[in-house]
Length: 376
Image (cartoon, rainbow, N blue to C red; front, side, top):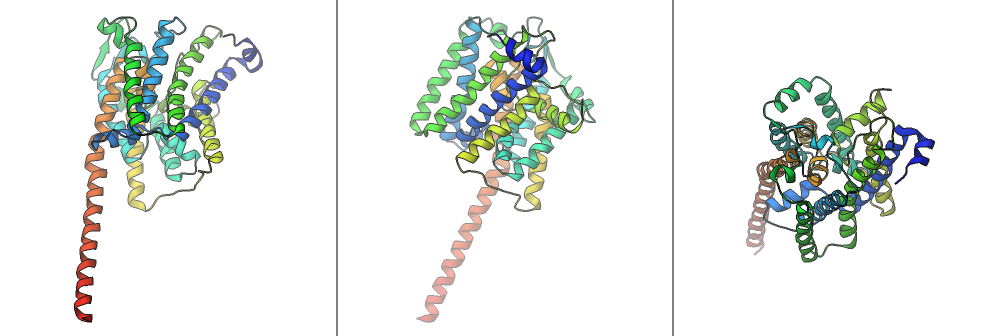
């Protein structure tokens, strides 16, 4: 596709940011309407159920993988020079960062992308957590936490001059990526039908996955039409959240690019989707104890996302669709960290609430019997 008109009108940086804004807005609409959320999917799966949340995540993941790999196979996309497939990767960062991010998204009740979507609908808990997530990510990238991140990420590096693409690394066939994506799609459709997903769940989840493919396609085709180097990338929210925060707070603190357009785009799309579906609602913290939980979760996600090289969307969908070795490891670690935290924190809280409810019911029953005896 020729972007000459947009480049001449908005310039290279403006066109790149505009692409991020538009694709981000569509991502926001689809994510808000489908309720796409990795945390919810992990919690559902960890509790022994493959229900609506898991089906939605599988549909999104399979659409991203199948679409991206189909474009690569057809020669319409080349992501070999992307950051996801650099000449080395951090296995320690993928494991430790993935575990931290998984734990953090359970504590904050959403990953970076989900917090952004919820914040746009009026959820002040998500807004606060999202801002803190962006601040910690920035501190981990270029601030006081950067040395800690560098040491942890450098503990175990995987070097491969041919890149870190899993299919090539294992010597699999050209069409393997498409087969994996289609296999996941079949499983997703089965569970989607079984759980009787509503229309917007189908459309939205497939739409979120398609936006990952569209992000790859847009930045790749733009990269060979610009004079200055344009990074081939797609949806991710750890680095972009930090860059957007710096761009807004410090003039010149970050370049105008795809990432800086992406974050406000998702916010705008989510807001419009919630507005037209009449789902805008102000929500806040219940008490100080719950606020501490969100703070810890946001800090874990900010550091964990930078260590892992991406968030639940960046590593899970974008990195997964590229078959990045470290991204797949990070995604597995996120599932493990989230499932463990859900078991230790949320399910324990649920058990306590159930016990309290049973004790309260028992007390009421005893009181009722006593009252009946007296009146008799």
